[in-house]
Image (cartoon, rainbow, N blue to C red):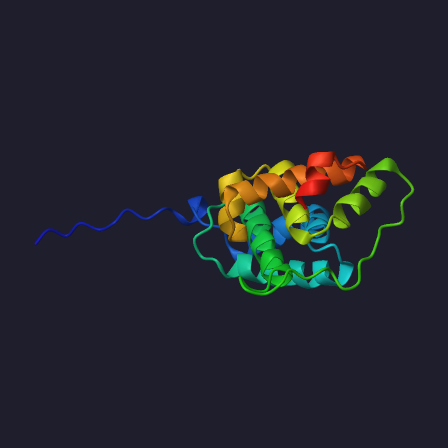
Length: 174
């Protein structure tokens, strides 16, 4: 009948990121991605494995808009870290095997170490995802496979743990 063809973007205005776009993003954003992986996993070796796997996952996606490579890479990294630390819904939460610390010479490095040592891991994930990465409680809950209330409680416990004191109502609750 009618020969309508879908309009195609000219090659210079591609809408989706290519492997080269992801590689360029990785070159510029390697340090923040590694830091995110370390904060989530609490382990240098797990962070390295997580980063490598998540970059592969991000590059394999064929529907990432150009210019969104970094945010997609972060999301893949968070999802991979969740899979590594929380192996399944019925299994117990594991602690990072070889907790390593960054040599603390500054307040920033001390803070990084404190976040990486948050335990149990749900507190670390809730804090990093909701406070540092600004994910909503609902989105954190979906990714972590728990209720938004659990994310909220874990974040509060993490904040108290980071402050160095635990209020009585949290000590008794848990």
